[in-house]
Length: 171
Image 1 (cartoon, one colour):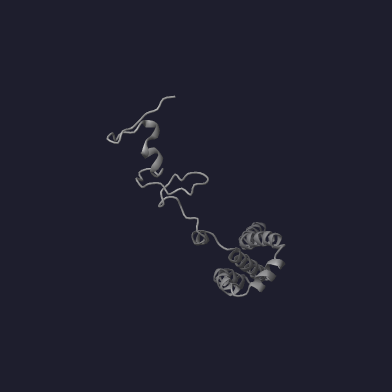
Image 2 (cartoon, one colour; image 1 turned 90 degrees about the vertical axis):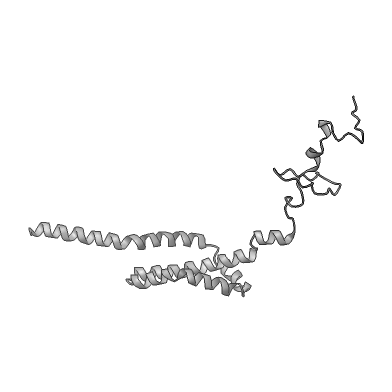
């Protein structure tokens, strides 16, 4: 084992104990000293500026609370119920009314979110009733597809029938 001694007059360090390697921030291009160590665990590799925040206020803005997620889910439940009503109205022969309901769903959901933020009890009630909502949403999705395709199909069927009738009548 060999030792390397450094005199006070000599500013050079042996490569195995370079101060740049051990004391500066590991972020490329950063010349700041590393954050102070608490003495336990891993030694810091970044400076105060680059080490990131572990404060509750920093993490709170990055993620949404469970209450906000529940409010959004409850608003989606009510939106789907209204959407199913609009779909039923469309199938009952009132396509313009059903379309108007469909066009009003986005602002309706926004106002629901605002209203439900003030009533956690209603949110809980809606979510407990919406446990089987996934199945209903699947049916609603197929219903909406049918509502979009059905008028086109009816128009094509009428045109084919008229062409067939014209062919049979010899016109």
